Length: 148
Image (cartoon, rainbow, N blue to C red):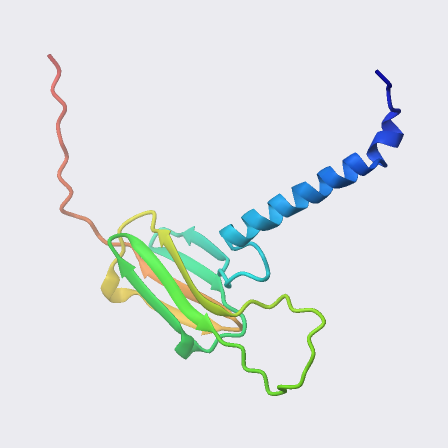
């Protein structure tokens, strides 16, 4: 058995082939999870909570407010829409395209009940801000635990 010095191993064709296989594997799964620039746009979100509200911010650069849909149903907030590619130059050659276009849908579970009648949404500078007042659940019934 012949031993290869570590430096020579990392510079060998075997190592290059392994790196190429790992990159191929990563790109395949990035396409499935939406992390690839070539995949449909998936908005990144930030969810926070105050004493009174649940606040969700979503990055939606390049969209018109008319292309965004919001809904709240059974404790889930859904943000969906479509980013359209409106190219004015049909003869243009692209050398690099990292911008995603197409339909997207993002659903997140809310950490508590919200008053659906008082939800407010604002879209400014490519950021959608949804403020959802927490529901006043005053009719909660305490359950006494019996000991034997």
